Length: 155
Image (cartoon, rainbow, N blue to C red):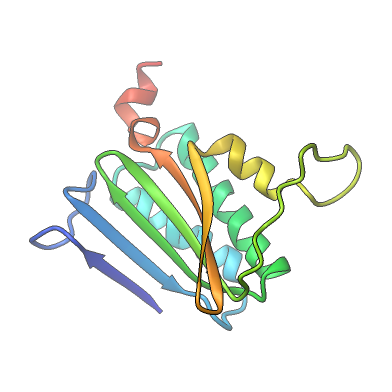
């Protein structure tokens, strides 16, 4: 179930976030969580005008990696939360275990797996985790300036 929660006064509009906007996608027990999460994120990036840069593609990869890790290693995805404002896009994937993720120091060539958090670290500006109750959230942030079309076009 998708919910959109504007945290600024007034209705949610298309374009760069004014104030702070949050979108949530419930994924508990939903088949195809990674694909649904990518589509949800793609739609949000388009609404916010953040869909025309290389960084927007990197953002979709970060979301895919976080959702895949939750699906494979953390008792499944519970929720994807995107929070955007003028400074950054904050991505959170909530899962069903309090066990912290393990980032392998150097993925081994030719060996599958072990690259998810390495990719998240390389493509995001910050990432981390926080636990609560019976689960945790693994999060990543991407600076808004990297997602803005005008900034990317001028590089």
